[in-house]
Length: 302
Image (tube, rainbow, N blue to C red):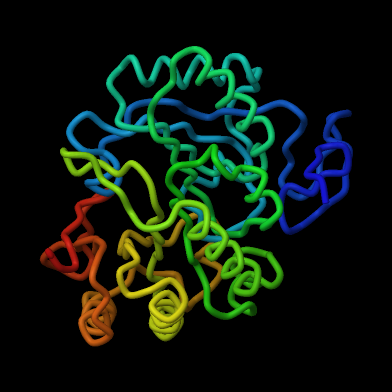
């Protein structure tokens, strides 16, 4: 099956709208790439940001509608400007000239066809940085196969274990079934992590998971799945940064930050199942105090 914008099938929703005529589906994206921000970012995982930062490109709009989205003005309200594929390629080159360790595509799913073309053009202009595909994990496998050879690092979220939870908080169906197939395809394409001499990621996959308050058992089951299906050497990044924003106040069980006790349960379980590689986001001395952005510690040093 060909991946097309004419009857859009870039993501699992498969809306079938003609984006070439700027018709919009669930994600609200048109034929044009819409960009919210492109800059050097220093607060990703250490192997991504390093000392000189990650060349982060934030795309507008999203195929999820998470009630707790921390970037909802970009993902749901569509903040940003439309640009051409040629301009996107130029941005990649500009970030490389500024010393970025990589090109970090944030929420790229709904623009994957245009991004592929931009990568081709940028490579012709001299782009030689690793390309990171930083997504929600809710991906169509055929669309991912279309990117095979163009993406060096996959950085997917694994948000939910229960499809019912995904439907309630992100308004999407069959999240677990779809995401687990997508993760396996990502791992097939890029394999285990490869680092350069400075410890900066060049190839591979890191699976991110943000702990949701009141949903620790889903976190546990997600860790089990990763170990059993992707291997205990798979790099994971456990995020403790959740705070209620956007529409989270409407849901009592997630209308708070996670507690130190919840985080410790996850840490202890990681030790129990002997996951070998990754990062855990720290929280402060008090349960209400969270360290901003990514302040990560290794799960275990080999």
